[in-house]
Length: 328
Ligand code: TXA
Ligand code: MG
Picture (tube, rainbow, N blue to C red):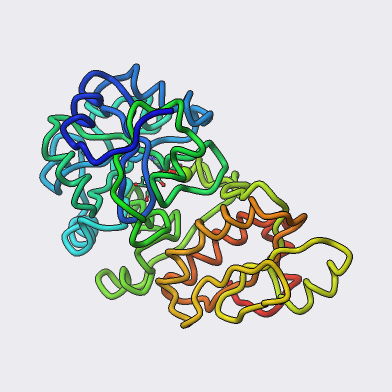
């Protein structure tokens, strides 16, 4: 078992020697390595069992660090990062040779983010290299939102787990690509589309599916909780699965006759986002055969929550429309 602690200097030393450290961010925990050390980058793919065609996000200390790593920063990208960094936003920009092809899976663009977490900000300031960090979960599983989640799944494969408490947002960053004439959202996440549109106006969303070569990692099979999961109108799903041992993840209503986790009794979408991955993990460990869940209101962080639920479900996204109580 790797150790869990709050020693930022120890983390910096391990990273500078080519080791792997799990780091807290406001979105989810990341599995970090020195972005300038190719052996360490290769180890990330091994430890996560991640296919090499799925590129990594490079985490930097501040906007200034983009200078050497990108060849062009369009004006809209400058505007967006000026507004939302540090924060739950990743931007895709043309890369320079300083970013290894191992990071980008051979693409000529790379993903960058300045995370907003006091411990990781201190760590980034302490080291003299950026950190590549995918979410610290085995490939296709739910992302970790506590240090213990990382220890449970990757404990023996990580050199150190830096504990920054539970993640305040609980969903991965929103990814915007600036590689084409018009910007495009490739992954819905912790920064809502509405907030982005307030700064740059209307923006296209082109998320999911393995057939989107621009977001190679956004496979529809991501976010598996490890048990079959259905998403739809809970009362209908309950009737249809009457003979099974069901667990229910509901938005705000409680279902006390069942094993139940309520995401946000108050109906607050930020609270629901914080609890989503924790709930999925908890439910997967309960004595249930199948997890039934429902979509949340489809605005603000609700859109990213609904996206994750669709991906976690065993229904193909195209069939999720069978259940008409939502509007994705
Ligand atoms: O919140 C987050 O973004 C977390 C924390 C740790 O920062 N990280 C995270 O990383 O979610 P990961 O590796 O699980 O997801 C990164 C996504 C992948 O879907 C990958 O395909 C996409 O970013 N990506 C990376 N580089 C890309 C590129 N050049 N073009 C398009 N998509 C890219
Ligand atoms: Mg991930």
